[in-house]
Amino acid sequence: MALRARMVEGLSLPTGSLARLRSSLRTSLFRNSFFLLLSSAFGSGLGFLFWLAVAQSYPAADVGRAATVFGVVLFLAGAGSLGLPYGIIRFLPSEADKASLVKAALVASGVASGILGLLFLMGLSLWSPPLAFLQSDPALAAACVLSVVGFALGIVLDATFVASRRAGFGTIRTVTFGATRLPIPLLLAGSFGILGVFLAWSAALFVSLIVGAFVLLPRVATGYRALPSAEAPRAKGIFRYSLWNHATAITAAIPLSLLPLVILNSPEPAGGAEASAFFFAAAAIGGLIYVVPYAFTTSLFVEGSHPEASFARDTRHAIGFSVAFLVTGVLVALALGRWILRFFGPAYSGAGYESLVILALASPLVLANNVFMTRLRVSKRVRPLFVIVAATSAASIVLAYAFLPMWGIAGAAAAFGLGQAFTAPLFALETKLNGSKGTTS
Image (tube, rainbow, N blue to C red; front, side, top):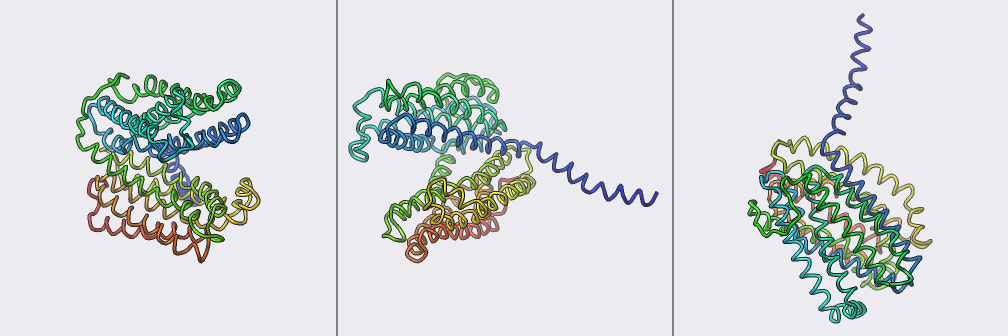
């Protein structure tokens, strides 16, 4: 009997661990994170297939112009969202009148993004003469402006789904958009020219917004009706909070966004156009690893914004889940990085591998900093968040200029890694000075 008791006791440990693991996997933290990762995977995969179809059906010059406009449209939509997705995630869980808050965010982002789209078109001759053809074709101009507005509204809708712990609705909208636009360029290539590409993403975006606003959104915002409203939300601080977070997000994106430009503007052989291309390929692959901390800390942000949540417990779970994925990503980068880079071309494999490895190894620092950033967002301490991110982003750019002549693009990657390393102690110091105000234990 004693032997049997010891055997049962020994088995109970792994059984208990498995039970806790299964319980963790059923939490809204993991479920939201899983669907955010799934949305990224579907969005990237269907986007790749779309542009592959475009490249096979249109002249290279049209592909280049369409891709450039699409990138600008996404940038303007992100700017036009005014950071309101952050405000939605932080304020919606505790807001009594959820429908009014969502409507106000949609109206504000729609108006702001529409203005940005019109300003972009009006100033094309000044900042992008090669795209001036948009001004001479009313259909292209309308598709461009409406796309900016549509993508901004989509960003707010997806944030609403995430804040409501229904990130799977965002996945449905993403798949609807990606699958709907995929065949359209093939059908319109012969008759509409480059307009066929614009119509493809515009029509698909319209369908996905209909699904999101009329079918999915009423399920998470009680009393919501898809009619315009300028009613101010009860959470008066949402716009100020959102704008600070918006500025922080833009500033945090500066290093990886501008490092290719820094490399391009540097003299060869350390810099130049080819070196910039090699770094861009490495950063694109490394960026896939960074999706993991983004997904789990976004879900952590959602949980921390719900009054009943335990932020400390959810933080431990988010870190644990993220580390498991990050270890896999780093090992894949180390073992298969050269092979993956070879898809871009033979030269990329040799020139970009060191940068890819450095960026992959920096992923734990990216995770740590995203956790600290989430803590500050939950506690509404957005000003110190902006100051820390701005200082370390500037440090990354300065270090890149210093390291490039010595180590080439690997030096630029190291500058990004050191910037992340500098950030973590500053966040830790801020947390030590201010504690965990605004979070639940």
